Length: 193
View 1 (tube, rainbow, N blue to C red):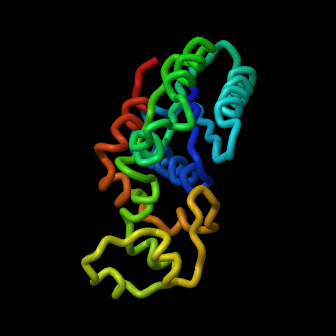
View 2 (tube, one colour):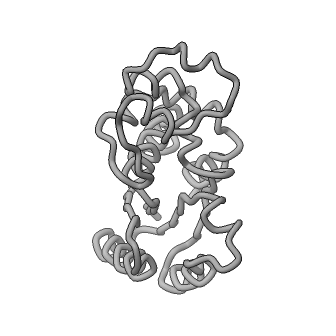
């Protein structure tokens, strides 16, 4: 049976990063992954996230047909859901609905805190994108995307698209730095059908 991975993430930069990471994995494991199909969907909506996920999953199923098994992968920030008393989205319910609707599996790809931190794994690429000097990296305090963008007189809003940002990043470096967080991604992509 053919395999289709369906990625969901909250933000265009996150989708582009997932696409580049998937391309990196495929390039390095081409012999095992030549027939895999991958779809990516941004679910950065104020409300209606559940309906959007269900609607997009149904569209993918209808597009590919019964010859495919579907694995849903959700990229999410740990800080967005695990540290809130009442998370706004019930991922357990979404998982159950998607499995009942034909997904073979539902995998959560969790950033330890925030996917913004993933972009910071290549500070040189980020500074090149922002046209900032690498001298900024000499201070010892923690850096975050908003403060770096502010230093470059640019705005950063989580979930919005920053043209060229992901293209400036060294995916090899990011994948190496995030090996433990990306383990579910590798596992799902290399599953035998």
